[in-house]
Length: 259
Length: 259
Image (cartoon, rainbow over all chains, first blue to last red):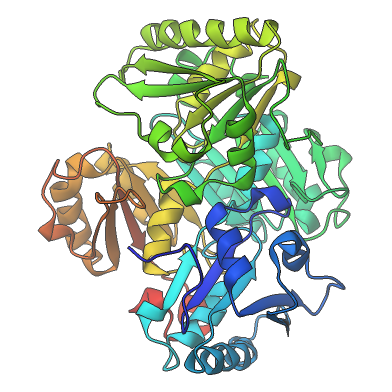
């Protein structure tokens, strides 16, 4: 197994920094961030600040680290997306060839709806060998959101499905096929989603969490009707606990999920 | 938001310690484990050692902490399960009433197929108030398993489904309804699962990871045919990257998932 106690010269690390609270970083992430020569921080063109960078602030060593903010656009344009991340990937590869260690920081987990995917796709496309590329898992927003309610996501044979809320027909289909459904990017669809859930008698088992573990921004609600479309932006997570299986009642009497 | 810098007197924390590597704990978990008065470590009756306890060893303060191992059986017996966890819950509640702070450590994430569910179900059943109960997310095995391959779990509109491999009919149905399927507890079904995947032409996109991030035990394979039933026990995770959507090829050319 790779030695993660310090960042290794010539290696790249996609590091998940969790949902935004500085103490929800893993020890491995903190050590790599503290010892890397280069920190790459992707920043959406739509936002003023880089939340991932703020999250890891206590571990940065700016006096001896190069900190690069890479601005990207969120768009449905495969060629444009690839070109944008190619620029960042070439910077990463150049630093690695020069014997530097590079950490890309990313909110949540680098493999769950993350910009790391685009960067790594370019890196393995002729720039770095797979053994120079490492991924360090982070707490994803759905985990942090569920933790706020202390309500189980899965028990025994439960199926958990995680998907974006962008296509409500797909959401409606998924409601029939799992015991817990987690929706990301639900901010702009809250009203239509509430209609769908009400028509299925499921409004009472849905919870909304926006900006989980982001200090001063966190918003939690068990009433989707009270939340307005767009108000809570991109980082809105809805957890729907369908709990249709008998063990849900049998094995966990009085569980938080029943409350 | 609750202050997680130290464990608070009279409070209970279900703390995920990640897949087994000591450095995949979050900073929050490490601080709570280091400052709690009581550490409760569930231990399966079927195993000799408590892996969660070994994982957090560097943070324990045995000279001033009470460390309680709680032995449980894995069984389909709701009443027996409830009774077993009632005993542990009463101990937790008694310590909290005495002004102690209590941390239950659990592998992975406390809300994803975890014993914490059973303990918390008892705690909220008349023993503690919800505001005394906290959950600290941990890296789940599927995240650590995916990280070993640096292959994205979800991109753009992808649906991720997580379920146990115990019912292969349910697994077969799920294959049609998500872009990435993650199966837990796959150890005893590897051969039948390989047959199912082969019949769908999916053997080549399945990866097996056992004991991810457990030093000396980790086993990784892209050939399910080479793995024998039962050999890798309970902690076997299979990740099947169906990747049927066009963005999978368009937006991530040459991604690790294609390799």
